[in-house]
Length: 168
Picture: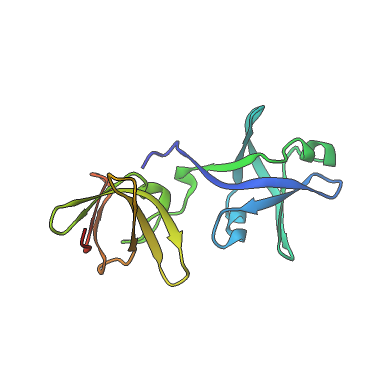
């Protein structure tokens, strides 16, 4: 996968206190996994800058982060609504037959009869299993449970192809 690709993992939703702490909406699962990264790329329409995480904590349901160099409420407020990214190479390696959703977007999806069903458009997290959302030529969604070795027969990262056991 592209190592310099940026992955959006959250958003700054406000400041917390007077010492530069930031309230975060984390897109990681669970939300506190955002604490696992040493540095974050913060961007908005005015800037893009890499910051080291000085401190972090969960306070009730809030996710709070303190970045190096952001030491007061005024500085923190300038980052409100900024996106939080990491580089793809900062993501942990996965075990066999597990994938980051981001890596599978746009893949061709064929069934075992070599019929093209469409392209991977997105994923849905249902709790019991993830669901692959495939957009066909008519722009309609096909929902396929992402169950390795059951409905998902093969994922080829090199050819960007997923083979599924699924009828048209």
